[in-house]
Image (cartoon, rainbow, N blue to C red; front, side, top):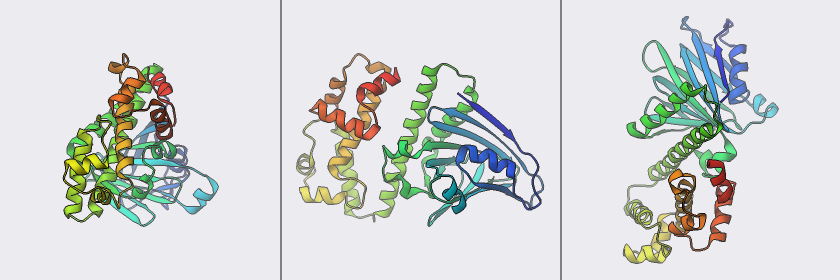
Length: 325
């Protein structure tokens, strides 16, 4: 695990900080950074930890800090990473495309570095603040959630329990900067990524639920999802089965997913693949063959399963298991 630390240097009269811009640009992509100078007590420091393909940044400061990736940066320095903001005791403001959000602890928000964006950090109350940022390759996260870019610049309320687990884990990583065992580093990276994927999925589903009026269609979608999750292991799970068991027409089952990123079939496959990957990477499942795992989650053809797995996760089930060992 590679670790970098940085402390605030001199601040220019205009509030810009070339030193901070250089330090942040190495991690988040080229951008301009600075401070709002109505508060003379400006402090800043951060620690960044590389964890596999991801980077975890702990940012501490006092005053109001801002960063902006402008068109000149996008044109000259191509980048494609998602930056997730975990506020802790800070107030975060992000803006990208037509979306703008201000949020504090209990929420997460993110931007993508392949487009222009603006971010600002300040204390949620008085004194100093702390924020954790996660930098994740865009291609890696899109392999799970192709439509995630649509949430850029938005904040999602993930609730106190999910937020507490996520923020505690991300914060604890800073204390493991001396970890050198590559197997443990890989395990830490996998845990963080899977947690981030769970939160990303929650955010996407929340957006779908908010955009859908509280009608019978929304209630039907919730019933369908609940039933499907309870029956993922059944290879006969299908639109016909769902319609029959829930006393709906097949057409109505299909229509419940309209307006989301999924069809009924693709959502069921997506959920099955996620469960298979958890099992494949779990030390407690090493005694089960890949075929047994695939079949236990409703797949009936291993070749088809293997193709779907590689298409979604970018590697074969065999290679994924080997990497996790």
